[in-house]
Length: 115
Image (cartoon, rainbow, N blue to C red; front, side, top):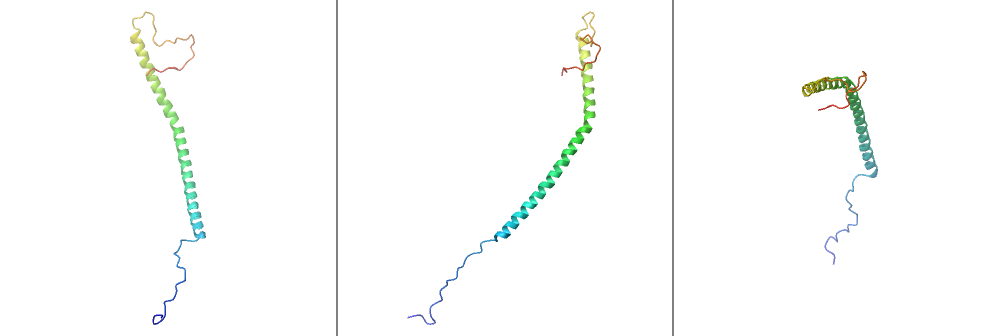
């Protein structure tokens, strides 16, 4: 016989857990994240371009200084080489230190620099 008060009611309702945000919300989130990423990439590209421009102009402005430094270094090395040549060839009669080996008065920059 049934218990007093009757049987318990049958639970037929589905009890599914919450499965997360909907497709539209996910699409909106992905779109927002991508838009922010593209914004940051654009700002990074602008900054990189500005740094490249700054580097180029700094090199342009440094060229005269570096050329002058190279000229001073070449002159110092040339004078040291002449001094060494005078010291080495002092016993050779008729030797002129620093005289060009070419039969021309045209200036030629030294092709080889002895370090």
